[in-house]
Length: 204
Image (cartoon, rainbow, N blue to C red; front, side, top):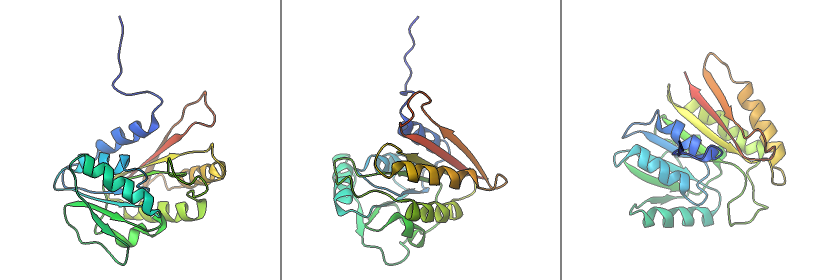
């Protein structure tokens, strides 16, 4: 008898989406730390529904342009910002051109779900990458901001130049979180040492 799974076992991004969707209800505040080409932003907007608010940031205008185009293809509009203080709490999608380390100051509430794909923008300049010093600041502030019972999904890419260092630092950060306050799991492809992997944390 053949079996067909509804999820590619090795697709850690889809595992991240699935695990986040378990704790999201319509109307929640959701955050994409690395808008990239808009895949995660779109996924979050579907989780939160029409009454939800998605805040997505990226340091590259190219990424936000690509995200806006992907949302438009799905029939969704967005608001564009350049940072500068907390955003109002309102349904819809906010795209902000800032470094992800600055995201906490913009949040209008406590997010139920946060996601990030580290590394570089697919199709963009591979020399522009997320870096441990700013990524760790973002993760620390987001752990503090996350609502009780909320989850954060971080997809880590060790294969590109500089990726191995960031992967080590991010793994260390999560391994040192207080187990009384956070649960942390990791999903790795054990027979591909340089494959992306997922770290998922849930705030107690």
